[in-house]
Length: 308
Image (cartoon, rainbow, N blue to C red; front, side, top):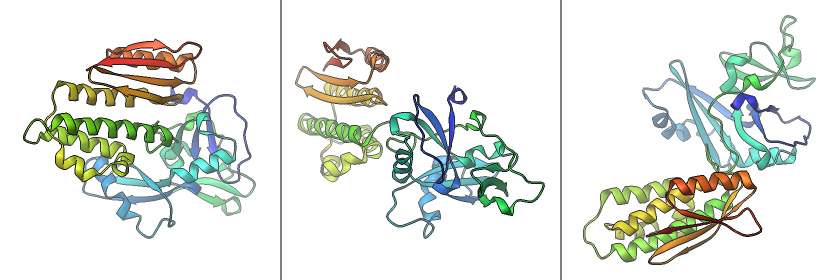
């Protein structure tokens, strides 16, 4: 399905665009730094843990870098990128976040570059040592004319979303809203959970998972205070955790959590939906979680209710 969507090649000398529908974008090496290493690790998540140390001294200071890791035969490929810088450039060319479905890197499509690909009159993309690089066209030999045509067949797998981090579809504003929700629930866990003695390891792991997924919570609330006091939770607390997970799954492009009310008996959340299709998707997710839904009169917003 990804290759059915138009793929746009993004480079620093590109012209501004005007789009009626969303597209995927493929970034040239101008927007990322690449390293290849042979490492004695088996899984990508293990390699990703050491990615920052591999780029010491190679990245511009002041950037907010994230990392993509993939394997090419026996070699690990590391891509460091600054999503904020990428987003700013795309917006300057008319590619706002709502018009960008997925972001890919040229190296992910290395096997599609079977010949030089012209970017403009002076530059071209070529493959050297299994790496996509940018070179001056004048450096190409007489038999290396940039004849390759670019289209959606270059679309690789494993794209990155503009909003948030790698593979994230939550905007910064939505992440902060979720963080506030998590703080609220965390406070409830402390009050009601303090009745029981002893620590619950699975509960602690649950909270740590929230910190990993939503770093904003860490700065919004005293992390150590929560971890030290977090205790066993009863049925209501488990339902609150389930609600958090459900809400996180309901927030994607076109959806914003605008209100949340919680009392001893249950909770009520309101979501702003960009259109009816988005609202249908949110409603289906709520139904799957066994929550009640109601349409807000005169809009596509949804009100979702659940009991504790």
